[in-house]
Length: 224
Image (cartoon, rainbow, N blue to C red; front, side, top):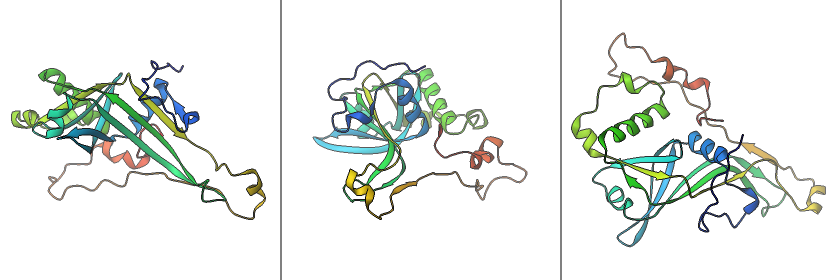
């Protein structure tokens, strides 16, 4: 069952290509869970800065991390930001240059993030990040050193002001162009995890964990 998200603000409302807009939480969560890479837009010293980083979701909250001493982490809790996540699914090859397009799924989230200061919440969020990438990995790792924990900043943003855009399917050409002897269609893009490559200093007898070894059997982007 699809659960409708709250009506987005005017800034989150999709205007161009509105027929591709989706605001339901099922679509929103599926895209965020499928693509860990995001781009976060800030204003730093009066200038726009867009930083790529990893994001992960817990319920209706989006998290990302960075160096606790970075300007972006320090400034983010004092300003509105824009977080984007995009997945390219294929090239849409039409009978005219104007009607070429791409199949894609994207999310734009607006809001003012909060810095996670509570140590237990912060540790739980970092664990969720690792588990979202490699399930079962956190408990196999050595515990974080205090200096590592201090050096890592975690931001959280409510997903209450978000919108999605999705395009799928074949090209849409002008009616008269369908009679032209020109090939048209879709060139799908599917990313796949490769075979794990052990670090050259892995100790003898240490086998690749099953959770890592099984990655090549599935798609790169979760949820596809």
